[in-house]
Length: 510
Picture 1 (cartoon, rainbow, N blue to C red):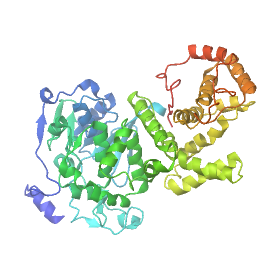
Picture 2 (picture 1 turned 180 degrees about the vertical axis):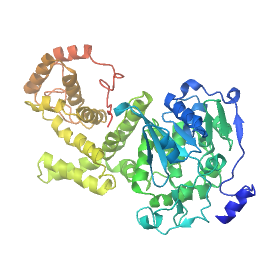
Picture 3 (picture 1 turned 90 degrees about the vertical axis):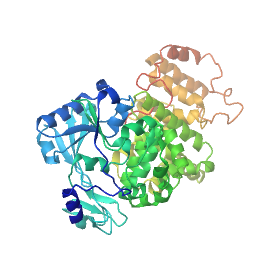
Picture 4 (picture 1 turned 90 degrees about the horizontal axis):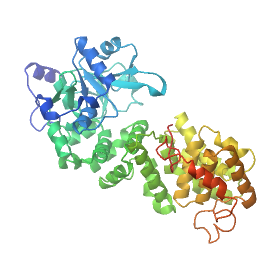
């Protein structure tokens, strides 16, 4: 640390080939970068101006600048500044300092579900992992050793604490990829580029800043991030950045399970989930990184219909993200693990267990075996359980249970899950069509649909399970009793884009 301080005083830069070259500051004018100011978020600009008016430097930073250069409207806006977290917090009415590993400030605008968070980080100094204080354990096992410290790494070089502030040039070197290390001044409309990020963005290339092996050791989650960005942006991974990925993947075992779980959810919610899965396979990361993905994709050959079901779920998630609709992590996870639940459920029923208790036991077993690390996340686990427990209730179309089920808060998610099962051929499509008709029907249409069930009996066989499925009492065989309600319903069906209703498998917001 003393040597680094002396080098800084003397103006020395790291030697060529070292892990983190500082780069050279280049100011790129609008005539060259072409960013449309109209794509920026008004609150992000407000945060930058507030900080600048208080005498600080401030810029929109990271992925938002990358997306702006590509002509895309960023989903999130982050701001970087030379103000400390305490100085940032003092400038805004609703601002909260969060995090221990990296202390940042969340500036909040609006309330309720419509609120927006602008994440503000302070420029961080370049640290030398070999000269930084080291602990033997991790975040959980070394809490006492981490207390009060600003810069700490573990035995593998992974950064556990990083709260040493520095100049912008060092902050840029701390960032992972060249395309994520640019700063945009919306007042002067200038991009600050230290590592050729604009050039790489134009070439659609993901390049690690510095030595990839060292950078992956600092934060193994970068291995997942490079896959996510490649899939999301359609970028190629630069050969030197790609080469150590498979070898370094073992470092992910040291990352807290909650953090890798969050990265998996991001991977599946980019709007390019199918491409992300393919990129994981391409980089040799489709086994062992995410236990939930392992069971959903790697063991597909063990379960008839599993792969098709998961592919349909991911494709629908991509569609919804592309249409600007919300997607729920609980719905995706319920789809990933459904066939594990289904296997256990069927085995317990075969042993004489009643349907509902058997399903509860199967769900408990899957939570214990597959997602113990997230089962404590109350709402996520509760939503998954409700989606699964609703499935046998769809088959009981009698009495008041039907109207009661439609009024359940999670009905839409449960129905969308049912629709996916029908699309995958797991059950007769008539069951899903009946529930769609009923949920969107008038009182008269609902009475007619209930009368159909009484006349024909329940139908919930898998499509193709028998030659007489459509003619023996409920496969939609053209009886006069079905036509009036269905003809009326289909004239009033809502379009698929209308808030996710009326289309197949549309998971609502969690």
